[in-house]
Amino acid sequence: SSDTRGIYGGGAGSVNVIDYITIASVGDASDFGDLSAGRVYMGACSSTTRGVFGGGHAGGADKNIIEYVTIASTGDVTDFGDLSSSRRAVAGGSSSVRGLFGGGAANSTNEDTIDYITIASTGDYTDFGDLTVARQSVTAGTNRLRCVFWGGHTGAYRDIMDYVTIA
Image 1 (spheres, rainbow, N blue to C red):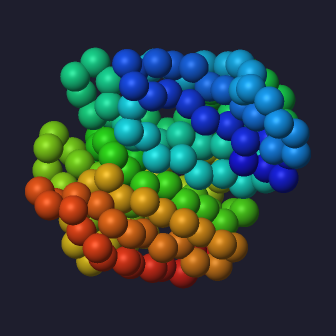
Image 2 (tube, one colour; image 1 turned 90 degrees about the vertical axis):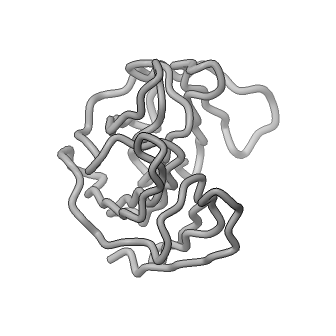
Image 3 (spheres, rainbow, N blue to C red; image 1 turned 135 degrees about the vertical axis):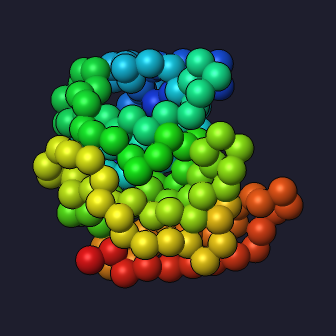
């Protein structure tokens, strides 16, 4: 999201739709554009300018795709680069400069990987580090300094919280 607009995309049934809402008003979502293909279980992060979607699952396969949109205008995604591995159920978080994608599952194997991107430029991931426990369906929350990854699933639900300093 930006200060004005929130966006979300993909979902059950592997839809490729991206919708947006105007945060300061009530009402239904409006069509923003489309992902390159329908996906579920993606991670997402943003700066005030760009929204970025990473990973996910579609067509029976996990994906390593990273795509972005310019939040202030509507339209379809543009290719950003690739994650370190094809994985679903990945968590995303960001500062205004750097986006993180952590955890997930690759071919049913839980991952502990944290990748980062520089949101203002396009390109493939850079290795950031690892979660303390490999897990999928992780949730992430951020402020401008820190990203916290919590919960997840390893065959059982987990009550773990990890944090990293984003810079």
